[in-house]
Image (cartoon, rainbow, N blue to C red):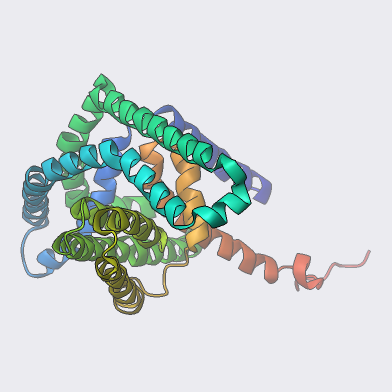
Length: 362
């Protein structure tokens, strides 16, 4: 087979895969989630297998433990978070109005020089806009939750995902051997090398960043709740969840926490300083302790490229795209670096033709 036919075959296969994902995106969620869960838990099952536990029993034990812990956390935390989220959405317009009042009352003379007599109208317009936006968001979330499709997706995610993860964990070595046997013999070592590089990037980021997010959830949730901040648990867990994208979670949480703290504790600036101190400690913990030790430098995913991947794949495939964004971004990054290395070693870059058998003169 010529090089052109090989390239056409693989490009056609890639296009077919993307089209299949797009067409089947409505039913892929539990299967993609099960694959992600199996990938996360496979090192634990491998370690148990090395200790002498059969892989089937190890996979059953790990999945069972995960399901029990997950259900326990759902019953303990989700009702609290739901109540806090409902109350936060209801009180958000009032918080915005109070922040506007504090800002305009303290700086009325300076703002009137800039905005003139339009200052009250501007404040009223912004307050009305925020109220309308919050009302729309609340209605949208309520409609999304009450829809039958959402209920079916949630049910399939809770029931089907552990089953899929168990079967994948149980048969993981066989699946890897089978996939290896399908690789083109001539390029098998190159492809296996790329797959190992992709696996290192994913293992370094997904498992490491998941651990970072979990620790930050606990730290910010406990610290903000202990400080007496309203909705501290909700904000803390949101920070940990959004910390999957570096700096986004901490910046979003800082803005929310400061806004709530100023309204709640005004004019007690010492409590606002305590909230700022919590984020200073959290940033130090994330940047100098957690991230270097749990994630490291083997990721190869820039935060900007990761944000673009999350937005792009999320827009194309919905929640399934969010689950696939980081693995696909890591794979694309590895393949792009490989293509660049090939280009730098090619005559297209060096301008020197590669050595080959000399042509016989006629």
